[in-house]
Length: 360
Image (cartoon, rainbow, N blue to C red):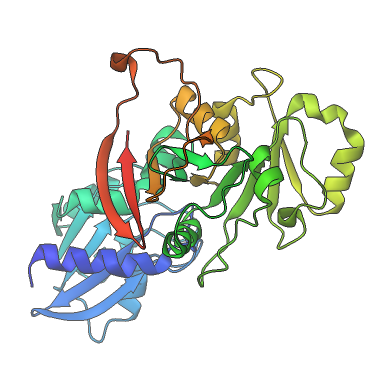
């Protein structure tokens, strides 16, 4: 096998930690000796042993003079666990092949430096793009101090996310809805606006698959949500993000707290809109590294206008509605040269729909 093959294997192993290690990165590790894999492991749960340590524990023989492959630079600092590089040095590993460096200031090349200073051969940058893509949530969180934001919408060919009555069930196919539930399980939190809750009464869970339910967030500047909403009366872990002006609604706040609802009071830019950047900073302080925004149109537009999003996932259904609610509202662009420019990262057919992944 080649170095690329072994790093690809670390990426696949790392994915086993999806939904369990945030805000830490996804890391997989493979140890090879005499052209044979003698150990493998991944970071299984936040606060527990890292991938390298698990691979060493799983090794079928001594790792002395072996080569270790890992998708992310081993840590060189004390956190919830001891530094991984110290154990690699103690075990007399011969070579370490790394997919990409860790941009966390606590690591950021220090792991490589310590390995080299102890006579261990190091190679960095094998399948670097793939390694960065796997941990896009982590890198964005570390570098920008806010969550990675994906806007997700199911729309008709003529860009409608609901009919004139606000009804949107179901624009997309059953297969697309299952795919979205899989997406939810990979994000720390999913967010919708108050209008979406009032119109669709969603649960925002992952009931169509086996996986972790994300934190469920409702953007509701005026606390208009009904106490009977399904999202408030199903599984807990619900947070309402509202404006500081809403603090005057003491009775409603007490009623929501009795239902087990958390509330974040964020500064607002007007009566109807919350400051998106302040909201994202608050979420980051609460260890939300990734956010899936599922509507509605006004919420999408708020993120677009603030230029605070990383990607857009559009599920394009082969339907034409004519009249209805547009996916995106007024962005203040009147000329084609002012249009928000994106790039297509990938697309695929899911059921009867086409899913397009756009990146900034």
